Image 1: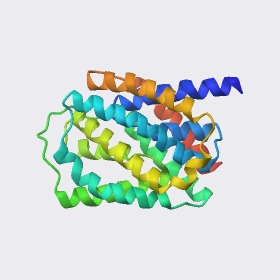
Image 2: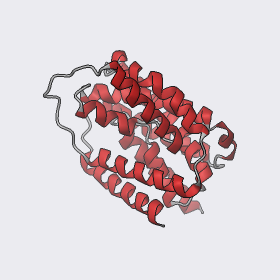
Image 3: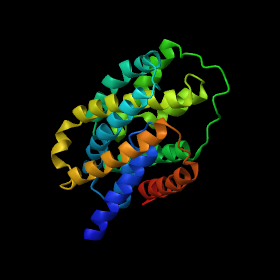
Length: 244
C-alpha cells in the first residue's frame, strides 16, 4: 500500500512536469495512471479535473507572465467550450463506453506527446471566428465527457493550422484547460464527493510538478524523448482500457 501510494505521487509529479512544460494540465496522463492502478471509474474524471485546475492555473500564470498568450486567439474557442464542457460533465456514460472513449482520447494524447511539431517558420494567421466557435464547442463537450481540459486537442490544432506560435499556443491552451476543467467539474459536481481520500497528496504532487514544468516550458525545455516514453505509457493504458 505504501509503495503504491508513493508510486502514484511520483508519477503524478512527472506527468505534471512534462505536460505543464507544453502548457497542458496533464489530465490525460493522470487518467492513464489511474487506469493502470485500477482507480474506480467514478473517481477518475473528477480527480483528473481537480488536478488539472491546479496545474493549468500555474501554467497559465507562468506563460502569461512570460508574454506567451493571445486573448484574440483564446476567446473564440473558450466562449463555446465552457458551456459545452459543463454539459459534457453532466453526462454519465456507461462504464464500457466511457472506457472506450477514454482509451481513444489517451491514444490521441500519446500522438500529441510523441509528435514533434515544426518550428515557427510560417506566418501565423488568426482563426476564423466561426471555425473557432465550432471547434471550441466540440472540444468542450468531449473534455467534459472524459475529464480532460481539452489542451491535447487545441494545441495541435493551433499549430497545424498555423493559428499560433508554439509557446503562445501553450499559453492559450493552459488558460483554455483551466476554464474547461472548472466548467466540467461543475457539471460533474455530484461525483466530487467520491474523490479518493489521498487526493490532497495528489494535488500537492501535481502542483510541485506544475511549477517546475511551467517554469521550464516558459523558458526553453526540450523533452521530446521523455514525452515519447510517456506516450508509450499512454498507449499501454489506452489498450488496457479498450480491450480488457
